[in-house]
Amino acid sequence: GNSVTQMEGPVTLSEEAFLTINCTYTATGYPSLFWYVQYPGEGLQLLLKATKADDKGSNKGFEATYRKETTSFHLEKGSVQVSDSAVYFCALFWGKLIFGQGTELSVKP
Amino acid sequence: GAGVSQSPSNKVTEKGKDVELRCDPISGHTALYWYRQSLGQGLEFLIYFQGNSAPDKSGLPSDRFSAERTGGSVSTLTIQRTQQEDSAVYLCASSLDVLGSNQPQHFGDGTRLSIL
Image 1 (cartoon, rainbow over the protein chains, first blue to last red):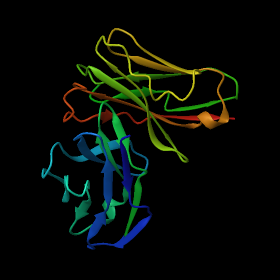
Image 2 (image 1 turned 30 degrees about the horizontal axis):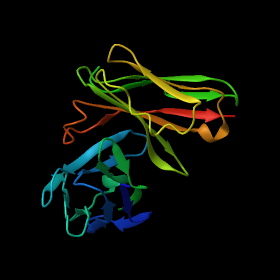
Image 3 (image 1 turned 120 degrees about the horizontal axis):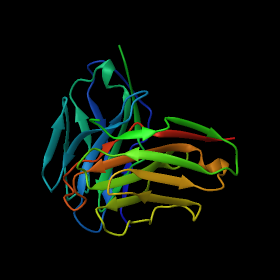
Image 4 (image 1 turned 60 degrees about the horizontal axis):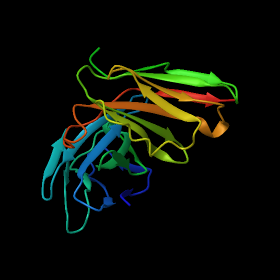
């Protein structure tokens, strides 16, 4: 079946550090891929998406590239800020969203 | 309203009682989804509705769970004879079209359900 696996957290970084959150997927076809973010006390928000192989999604300084050959969609940001502290969810869409387990990011000043 | 609206925001009830959770999707969105977010299971799909098609109920965990969508808009998720393991945040999302998978799902703030 379809599934998403992402790196376990929590991840703790200092401000301006480089961020990578790994995400790999298993799918029977070629799903659309998403990163959602949940800030403390808030609902899930779409961060970025990619709909086909080699597409790069980007938003708010975050990027992720749809890699079919490695079935991956790793999230990256060159310089994190305290305001990026949140839980990040990788997901694939195949009739419905299938989420990874979430990765908590904590950025310290 | 501009976003997906869910009510109540919090619900505390005794084990064995029935509960109803409501979702108002974004106007014009034809697809509506229910998910559950719990500590042990993460984010799980429950059910989705698309227009007048039969709903996909494949994610409902037991026959105590049911959902309706009236008039293609508002949806109600009902849990009968609640159990403690039903405690979770129930999230509703809507999107323009389920077949257009590049249309993002917009989530409500959820209903936090606590079973005593």
